[in-house]
Length: 293
Image (cartoon, rainbow, N blue to C red; front, side, top):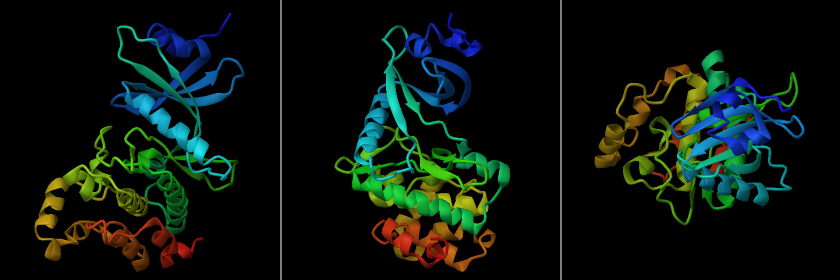
């Protein structure tokens, strides 16, 4: 007789195909149209994270992750959360449901910042180095992530005492470079680039912006624009670009970042004009980054 948890019993009618194959231990995250569970495969006891998505976005995300798995295979790409497979529930009274079976990580970067506070420069630089390399490979495969933020970076500890591996997760809002008008969601405003927010247009530089804002959060343990209407800031800057190009920089807490070089890197990654923004190649060549390579 198969062992069923309380969560299994609660969800067995809603997700019968999933419960037949996996034992759900607990909910470990989620929001909006998705929930994430820690689960064990019944056939061998192996542990996974299962992301349950209501609606067609789950199928889209699975296709993106599966394509990246194939494209990056053999490149020793540890920077992406491993995608195992997808499970589809038969349509019933509920909406279309897909379960993405994923590698289980220890925590998110958001969790680490929440409990530890601001990170030191070396740890922050190592995160940026790993993510910049990964995102460049994602871009080489004609995909833009579109929603880079601390909650979407998962940390995997290979073994005790070893520095964790930062992994890019959640491709639910990704888009193809050939079709930059994102139909899968708007992203997260605190980390969204001006061109994405004001035009709905995503380009590779949009992910550079997101990584720059993520670096700012690592070093300050704060959102880039607390208690501000970011759309108003960007609109004002666009209307008078030459005089207000760095207005958003003046709104950020630079005193919490002691290194002038780190400040300059963030400013280069978050230029309002995407044409002036650093590329991932230039990020990895920056003097502040090179100290920790």
